[in-house]
Amino acid sequence: MIFICILSLLALIFIFIAIILLLRINKETLSPILKYCLLITFSIINFVWLSNFLEWCDITDALDPIEDDIEILIPLGFFIFLVIYVREHSQNLIKEKKDEYKDAYKKVEFYKDIFTHDINNILQNIKSATELMRIYKEQKENKDDLIKDIEELMEIIEEQINRGARLVSNIRKLSELEREPFNIIKIEIFDYLNSSIDNLIKSFPTKSININLNSNLKSVKVYANELLYDVFENLLINSIKHNVNEIIDIEIFVSIVFKDGKDYVKVEFNDNGIGIRDDLKKYIFNRSELVTSSKKGLGIGLSLVKKIIEGYRGEIWVENRIKDDYTKGSKFIILLPKAE
Amino acid sequence: MENSELISFIILSGVFIFIFMNYGILKTIISFKTLLLSLVFLYTALIFTILEDYYYPDIFNLLEHFFNTLFSIGILIWIIKIRKGEES
Image (cartoon, rainbow over all chains, first blue to last red; front, side, top):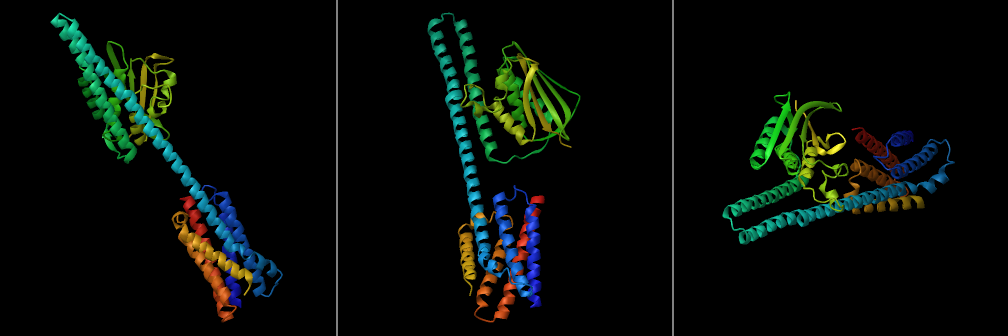
């Protein structure tokens, strides 16, 4: 008898402690409805066992009739708890699936937009150039003029083919980034910057490009990977593509900044291009947002850049080169986590 | 045998059928195995409660209380594990 009394008392104490601990569990771990369901169930258990304890210890059996009535609520409480949990979990699962479906739909629209707009645009430009060639061939009598005009048109065709190739390459990289996890290593930022600048100048031999790299630092490492080359290349190409000046000026500044308790390498790209309207600034890094809007026509280069920078846990944003006058050019700023 | 004991036994059997049918979802409950083990102890205690009305009342009564205590320990461990998961 004493042994049973001790067991009952221990069981009572354990459930009582469980009730106190349960009260301190926050709603992120256990939803309020689940928490109260358990609290009621545990309280009933304690009541039933208290009644048993009092009875076995010959103190009183006054609680016995109520105990018999509410005893069935113990398994019922657990049953309700499990049913609610399954229901909540299923609802969350449905919500996740809905979000996934929305994302997938957005992506499909995004790629559809690229093919219907950008690729079509490139093909249209090539078609126009070849038509012009045919017209020049029939109309121009001076051979030198004809050769000069055809060379110009060939240049346009070549530029459009390069644009198409860049677009396809960027789409491939963007879709790979969405699929695969990011591998981050320590890399020397100046190696990538210098290599991007050299390649860029070689890619645009007919343009007068003046790129200055300014920094007090001789060497600095960041947490990134080989895709950093695509980041710099896309930003530099952007500065050249959207520039109507005879001489394209690009100033690059590299410095170290301290933000939110961490060291970052700040890279600024200042250009003298046509600039970006304020209403477009928030969209340029997310081409898919533009799919349903009227602000179409931006490449996916910057979407890729943002995706890569986010993968490095860095930041990217754009400002006017001259404050309050977007027509004087843009300033793209990147923050990359500095490696020790 | 009291009616409430039989009803509790039937409902708890239903709980196990429900767990079996929805195990894929329910296993996502923090430390679900501890909760499941506790429920098994409660189920065993209920079986002994029913048996004590027919055979060896003293032994089965003792076993009933012993398994009830095991159930309460299991529940306490389960709640502690949830709290620990929250803290980490």
